[in-house]
Each structure stands twice: as structure tokens, then as C-alpha cells.
Amino acid sequence: MANSQKHRIFVAQKLSTGLEVVLDPEQTHYIRRVLRLRDLDTLLCFDGSGTSYIARIRDSKNKNLRLLLDSEYEFQAKSPARIYLFLALIKKPEKVLQKATELGVTDIWPINSQRSEVRLSPERLDQKLQHWSAVLTSACEQSGRNRIPRLHSVGTFAEIVRNPPCKRVYLFQPGAPLFQPATTPRDTCLLIGPEGGWTDEELKLATHAGFVTAGFGKNVLRADTAPMVALAILQHTWSWQFA
Image (tube, rainbow, N blue to C red; front, top):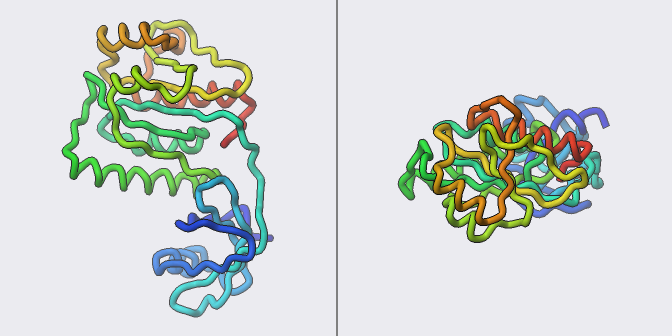
């Protein structure tokens, strides 16, 4: 299968072996004009749930391409753990979202902290969430991940403190003890603050909630760098098992 590992597309429907998929005009144009694939050529399709399928092109001259899903194609180790990234809103989070996807994050929560740089109206927030979802999908297509991270609605720091999704929560803070995650995969939350850092009030709430403060030695990393470093350390500790 010459093209299977090189070309991948996301299909927004539940996929299964033997299914025939009709692509939309935009995807048809991409496959036909950009990838220049033809009848009987193959590529990988995934629906974001965790599995890829070998798809064979049929009727490439029609307005909308059809693909026949021949079989499952599994090439990625699956971690039993979920990685939750809580990211204080910054001005341009797209690169963070893209790289976090490549590094195996399973859930992303944008949060409003007391020093967040960005405040969005409900209308603007809806537009941003749609845009960010597209960034996650594209990152999966290009990186080989089969599972698209779940993008949650914007929350607040207080909400996370009251109801964290797992027991192991790391809050990153300059000068805190070196980040040393558990050696075996387990559900883990990573909290990354804004450029201005967490407030004393937020740090106090986190301490009372049992969160573990962690850092990167003497290095002070920007809000768009810290997530990638934390995720890389986590994945290296877990032998790079992606979900």
C-alpha cells in the first residue's frame, strides 16, 4: 500500500470496514488536485475515535470521490491513561493546540484564570472553539494520531479546583520542584498558567485541593512553551504511548 502511511484524511462519520464513504467537495479537491490520487490508489481514513482504515479510491472522475474502506490499519500504541491539559487563555494558542495534539494529549480545557490575557464574548468564543477544533483535526491528520483530543468549553480555575477530572493534578509554577511524573501511565492533569503566572489566591486554592506544584528546574518557560515541555517529559517517561 504505497500511499497509506503518507496520506491521511479525517472523515466526520463513524467508520467501519466495508463502508463506502462519499467525500465532500473540499476533500475531493484535496485528494484529486493536491495529492493527485486516482482510482485504486489508497490512503488512510480516520474518524477520531482511535482507529484508521485503509481506503481505496473509487470513481475518481465523479464530482464527489467515493472511498471503500478495505480494512483496519493499526500502527499506534495505545496508552491506558488520559492526559488532560488545562491551558490558561493566551492570545494565539493555535501552535500549542497543534503541538499538544502531536504529543498525545487526550483532553484540552481552555480556562480563564485571574491573569488570563484574553477575554472573549460568547459569540467570539464560539468562533474560536470551531477554529481550534479544526486545528486539532488537522494536527491529527498530519501527525498520524488516530484519536482527536476532546476540546472542552472554556472553564474557570475555580471549577477545576472543585471538580478535577482525575486525582493526579500538576500545576506548573516557576521555582517549584522538578516535574517528575509517575513512571507508569495513569490519568494525569497538567495546569499551565498565563504569561503573568498564577495569583497567590489561585496557588492557595490549588494547595488546598491537593494539587502538586511542579516546574522545570531554574528555567522560566513561556505559557506557549511549558505545555510542550511537560507533555514531552510525560511521554518520554511513559515510553511514548499515545492514545
